[in-house]
Image 1 (cartoon, helix red, strand yellow):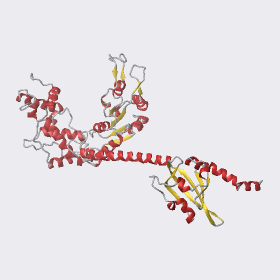
Image 2 (cartoon, helix red, strand yellow):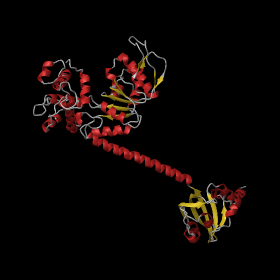
Image 3 (cartoon, helix red, strand yellow):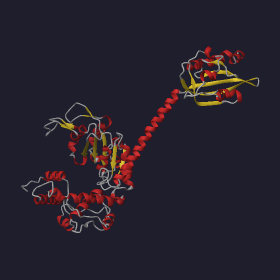
Image 4 (cartoon, one colour):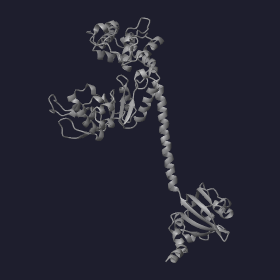
Amino acid sequence: MADDHADNRFDPRLTELILEAAGEGVYGLDCDGMTTFVNPAASSMLGFDDNELVGQPMHSVLHHSHADGSHYPREECPIYAAFRDGQVHTVTDEVFWRRDGSSFPVEYTSTPIHRDGELSGAVVVFRDITARQRAERDLRAALDEVQKLKDRLVAENEYLQEEISTEHGFHEIVGDSAPILRALQAVQVVAPTDATALITGETGTGKELIARAVHDLSERRDKPLIKVNCASIPRELFESEFFGHVRGAFTGAIRDRIGRFELADRGSIFLDEVGEIPLEMQSKLLRVLQDGNFERVGEARTRSVDVRVIAATNRDLAAEVAAGRFREDLYYRLNVFPIPLAPLRNRLGDIPALAAHFIESARVRLNRPGVRLTNANVATMKAYEWPGNVRELQNCIERAVIRAAPSGSLDLDLPDGVSSRAAPVASGDSAAATAAGILSDAEMRGLERANTLAALEAAGWKVSGAGGAAELLDMRPTTLASRIKKLGLSRAD
């Protein structure tokens, strides 16, 4: 049995069967370049019967021209070179020609055959690489598209950085410090996706501006961005605020009401101060984040929405989770892409640009065109720790613009050497506030109202045109019209 097995291994018929079963094309040549053998795979790819090829000069039948149709001289053929120099030749970028006159790309190896120490011909093994080349072209096209998108992102980033270095900046985001640039880079990365973004930072750092930038750079920019201030919603009304209710669902529900998630369908929802959501409400929020389903209060019908969630918090949600005040699964669902915002005291280099932006806004609105920022003002502001961050800076600038001297110099009322942990003046302590020269929000609105009314009286209630109130206030007539409506001003005043 062992001897029979050994004989079978060298059975010429077995070798022939192997060649016939091979998926690659195989054919043999003698030293004159005449075809001596063709396997079925080769015949199939070339479109010839094997009896049409055997005895024929291989080069003139299927290798006579280059891919562009130009003549391929026999003496340059690597296949024939194998039985001239006795070396193996491998080629990856040529074509073979079919019986119907068409060609196809091939990869082949021509190996010399020796018999009794003499070269007797060559064996050629080849494969059709059409599919591989197509896949390579598709891959190159895909890579080119990725590169185009990358180049576009780089260009948009450069544009964004140019914008934020100007007075108004991108989406009112002003500054060019490293923390701001990192935050804006994060915005550009996450905005085109539908991933949930969690914006973290102290109060007054501009979390809402970042949320708006994420929405405006997304594919949902033409749909609404619905804002929900979770800190201002009474505990018992969270579910109705988020998901709506039907008439009669509870006392006071006199009509059906659409919730914020439904309003944001196909758009984005901004959950500001998300850490304030009651624990019992968090499971329902988690459900709508996971599968987009919810029910209005008092209704059994399940509704579906397609909403991109952007959340923000000034709390340490990981610590809230550890304390049992925030669901861990909801935290991880929200924290898919974190965007941390640095406090103003960690980006003091942005103060001059921010101050200039707020001065421009305030002097137009309050009709104080001569106000200017000095180096001394900047030094004073950089020496302060800004516990209220950008919002506190804005309020400080507006007060200073109102109190500016006739020369236009600002009168900053920042406390000397007070840290960010200093207690603010109590709102009810009017004497202290008066001593510090601080105006309340109501007083500032009153000043704005009085200033606008004075301009209208001086112009004889003419809003636009030469000598109109808009010209006196140095603002657009449409802006003044909006302010008149907002302040509720009329000739009766």
